[in-house]
View (spheres, rainbow, N blue to C red):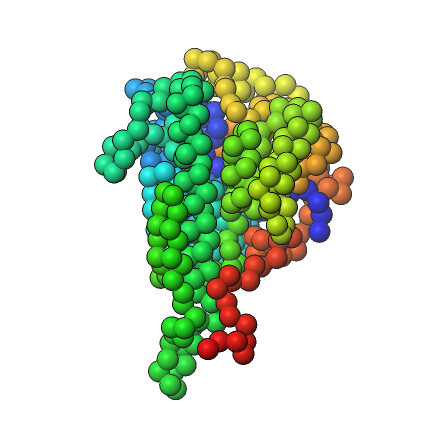
Length: 403
């Protein structure tokens, strides 16, 4: 298997707030099936490992932690899990990884949604759990919890840091419940024996009986064990607390280095978090996130981004490094960063579909020409793309030992 892995992060019209005003954008199609299926087809055309779909439970905001009244940026979006399910029958190899909130939703519902996605895609389902963070103001949409007002900078206060750690601890329980629910059906629980009339072996469907500090769920799932056993769990992380969450809960972690030195530091911290968490089995696959604007003509991508900055009234700000340049320039950057110990990259197109095509039709052939990226899919499942084995179910009873 070729070492470098690539993912695309799909978000509205792109990761620039003014992307929808770019001449190449398709704002009229944002809420249509054709828009998303077209993006997925393009990503699969480029042989990418996976695509992620952003989600939220409140309107997007330009101000972290609080809603805004802007009407000159995209507001509103489709449900990420449903988009991924929509993309499943129209694709055949690329992994489909929707984001869901772990603060306002229920693990049971998320577990059956991602399991169903894995069934519908025949083993290409994944999941990116996300704590509410800036979405604390979405709590009134559900009416079950009350949070303090969390404006810009609030999470850096002692009260904010304490709440963030609590949300991460809750998220870790959330993921553990989802994983146990995925295992609650043994792989051969379905008999489907028409002669005897037995569809299900009830002895192979298990209660999980999870009772944690934040959540309690009895189970079992209503959905049979997913084709991958455990669909891929991914997490975006920016520091020690999130790194520890990823080390305990995820298969892939997305980090946001702004230089090779940053990347080396992030990799070291992730590996330290794995040791602290006494992680066993496969090490975390580490991807670096970059926002990308690509053009074959030198300087054109930077000019395009500058025009969008002017339209938005401010330079683009991001947690991730912002790259403008040619696909060849980006290939140089990625191959240099990879030396820090990264397994791959999750690229955030500044404008869709233009910068996604810059990845698939510009960057990918260059990486292939340098022997750094696959020329054909070598596996049929998302775990297979990343060289991860299919885990055994934790409740399975070895043959001959069942009472």
